[in-house]
Length: 86
Image (cartoon, rainbow, N blue to C red; front, top):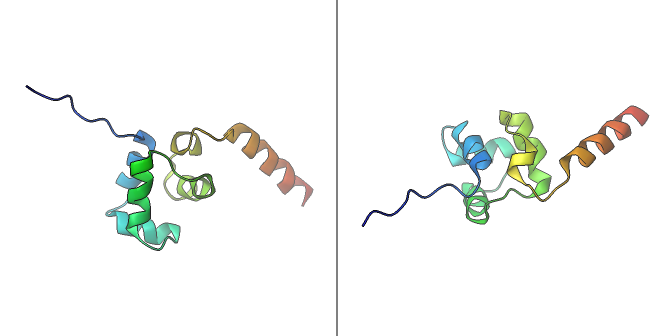
C-alpha cells in the first residue's frame, strides 16, 4: 500500500531553506548558533516571530507564511509609525 507523500509542515519555511545551499548556511546568515535551530523550526512547523523579519529580508519569504500566529499587518503598521516618529 502506498502512503501519501508527506507535505512539509510549513511550505514557506521550506522555501526559505531552499534559498540557501545548506541549513548551516542559513543559520550563519541569520546569526543562529546551529542548523539544528532550523531543524527544530521545521519540526514545529513555525518560525519564532522574532526571526521572521530577518528571514524575510534575507530571502524574500514573507513573515506571514513563516508564522501564522502573528498579526503581521499590525506589526508592520506599528513599525512604520515608530520609524516615522524617529
